[in-house]
Length: 291
Image (cartoon, rainbow, N blue to C red; front, top):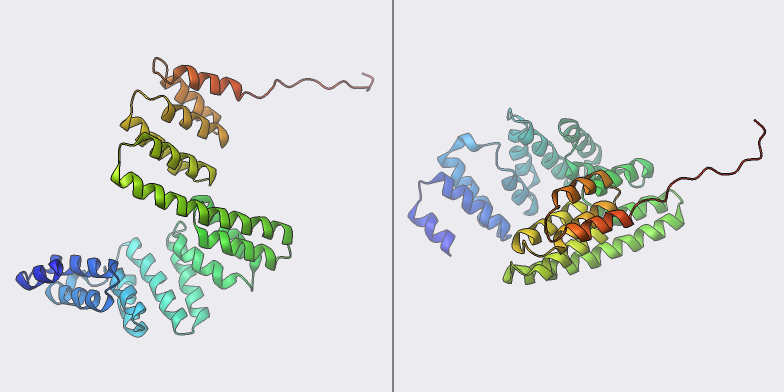
């Protein structure tokens, strides 16, 4: 209601119309989103080719031919980021229209423009799941390396392994997928509690631990960093950061962090953790060879 009220009182403000479109899209009020986006474009046609979510809203409404017009305009923009998403969006619409090969080509072109654009990589991996499970598996593992909590990739990785006849690995992969689902649920609950108590160090430590157990190391370290800022005299966030780096084999970074912690409350525990993680010295095996 607030959005609609602002639209009524600021009918010539294109920026407000675009913001309203994004808000309606986020609320899944798709028809209202399309109307707001189109009203904004009437006021400011220069934004044509920049409204990815207009195309997505049209897709969700089953209006793929119109969505293709939006995505084609995006492909004509000079910015690579718009072109990348325009190709991806067009691929989704072509897929909806039953043109799988055309969709595949568009996803490939999107990845050629931006090899890190994993939304296109994921869709392409699904198309290859049965036809080329080895390539699909490689793509899914690339996505999971960047986003260990991507549950769709984890699930389809198990299917790709099954399609390759690697049944034991597929079973383990499916179990890992279930752990990701459980972990994501746990994270969602913890984040809800943290939103109410943003200085609760125990919640931040637990969020760091859950992310670490799921292999989301960057996110785990971010939570420990937040904890350190919220409770600068508590040694646990820094110690857990050291532990996390050691767990994933980033020993050099752990050593640097321990050096920076000298003189703090975490220094002794961090140093002890570092010392306890040292590999035993290599010993020469006895030999019976003559020299």
